[in-house]
Image (cartoon, rainbow, N blue to C red; front, side, top):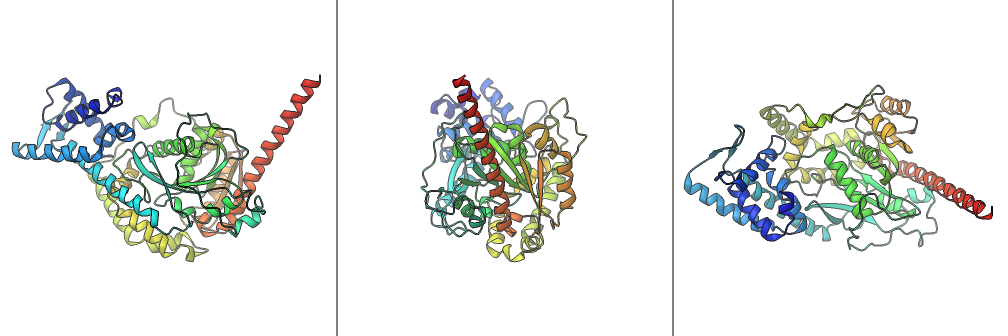
Length: 473
């Protein structure tokens, strides 16, 4: 089916026809194949997820218009109402609501249209970074990110961690032109210094790195702070959200947008996703920084012989729906209190803007579905296995010691004890040290980057000396 959807617009339109009618008329071979694909996608973790799962490639290529799909879905629903039928037997005793394909197509179009207008309004929105966000379509879905051009040549204090950490210099305005997307996996251009990739945590977004973007840019580095699909102002389609999906998002972002190796810094679940990126694609990552990262430490861990994510234990749908709606409502009504608790040293930094942005995102179409996906996440690999066994590169832990969500000091020390490549720096902060004490985090990040680049330069000098010695002999 993937080959058919990549064959061009006529093939895609034919596939859309079979998709919308597969539950009504499953007799034809084409409709049976499509019904099989729909049933595989319509699972408790991703209700109404069949259309984005099946047609995401066509959406990304532009061979399928969401509005055309929406129009044809409404027409098909009208025909179904005339026939007065609700259910159609599926395959292997599975049953599918007759209008699920139509509702999935219409829901995808509505969510997409909402976020398209949201992204359009971003052009005139005041941001905490001072620069308008940029937008990147990943697998056909809108995501945003924040960046600024390097000011190394304009700023005489560039490269000085102390000067840069005070955010004293304004970066030059950057163009909103998108970079080339021709980079192939593992083929990144040579660069003197890696870029900073800043990864937010659960419920947050790229703009929460407001205290780092200008400061790190003023030091002469390229800085990127993307927002995960399903978070912030990024699109919230009914996708199979997981550690692997967000890891793949970061991988593609580095390859297509950043186009150079990175030092990746992640907070909370963003720390775990950053470690996953470093572990599974180490050629893309020069260094890893974890800020109060999620993930357990298990020094006795042995990788399973088969992928545990292939056979997950699925909780009852009714229980998940009730729990997710209850927790979702609780979080929406307690954002201010929760943020103040997470910022124990500088609660004023958990300001009204941050709370309002989190509440705004929680009201987006599709937001509840993203929250529901948390209950279906596959069992994660231990953090120490990712950091040492798979990545093995330089790793810095900037740990807010007063994190109310865990025994942060013990967790940081436990990871250091389990991993020989980990350095720990405890900070007087809570769960989000990058936003609570940005000057301390900036100093740590720039010191870490300077050590990495100095080590690379030393290796390069040694390599050149070896070449000259060989040439003379």
